Length: 187
Length: 254
Image 1 (cartoon, rainbow over the protein chains, first blue to last red):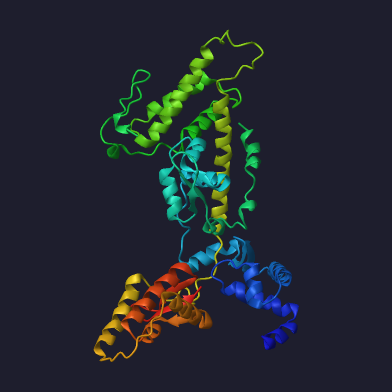
Image 2 (image 1 turned 135 degrees about the vertical axis):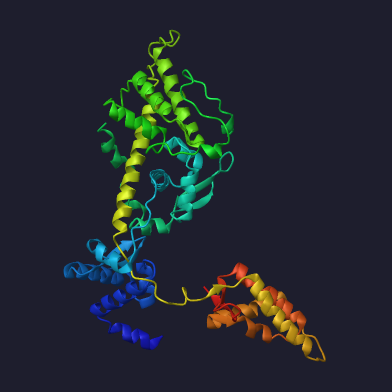
């Protein structure tokens, strides 16, 4: 559409930063640069630059909020240091932690995905059925189809919620499993 | 697994699983996430080298711990017992003299090797679990804003097939009341109906289902329209939305 295109030509970098901030603010889930670019009819490069600019503005300002890259998108959230006051206001308590068994199972799934129940058993040396159920209920893992093997066992992998709840950009942000070897040598 | 059938009888039957249904035998086993976890703990406690596990001593400690657990969660117990059996097997294999028929060139395989590999791999994932725990603790101190009211989290309800049927019946009932003289009958095929429906939805982004059904002149057309709606929802990126219970159903482009 003609008028919008003209308007866009007059959009200064600062205006783009402001627009990006507004959209990240209203988005319910982390919003991707691609979606920002589509909505604003801008190219990815200028949107990415605007997000970076916004991010550093937040950092310089040292305010109560921060811009974070989560699950492949951008999100505005409070800073960790203010959690007590925020929690007091929201009247929430930290939600129930996952059990040791669930965390271990989640770790195996996160690093070995797609992975089947017998494969998880091999690594953990213990049945993980109830842990898997908990993780499915919490939507941290999802079924990823069946493996073409005897019995066609179901395979599991981590979900987008997993990335969001563990504050990860993407799976590659997980430290490599080999890095945990150093800890092992201590025994 | 036939866990109820365990009549546990190894090593002086000091380790006992009291029979009965598995339901009334549920207790958690310490803080150990599994047999490998327990084994790692014992190795650490004994200050043993994981690459040179004093298998006799560790096996003894392991069995001691199992004996301590008077009442066991059966399903977990089974996994713990498998490990006990593995340990005993390794222990006995280590006591055996080397097979003289095996040529000397062949490398001597330590019976503990497989267990060590499993322990090392497990330890990695245990550390990874610890890392996830820390991450989730940090994440719990971070808050995003509450939900904003928008089209998506509004009172919109996904309409079910039954909701469409209700709308359909409403229209049919209305048609019955009308006295009609059919002069000629223009047949419209399902393909044509689908085409028309698709055009309508994609022109405006959404379409009121009731209004669309109203446009139909005959029962036959109505049925065709109805099938077309089911078909388009099934095959294309169109969803059915209802703004409130019993409200109008909207066909919306996704």
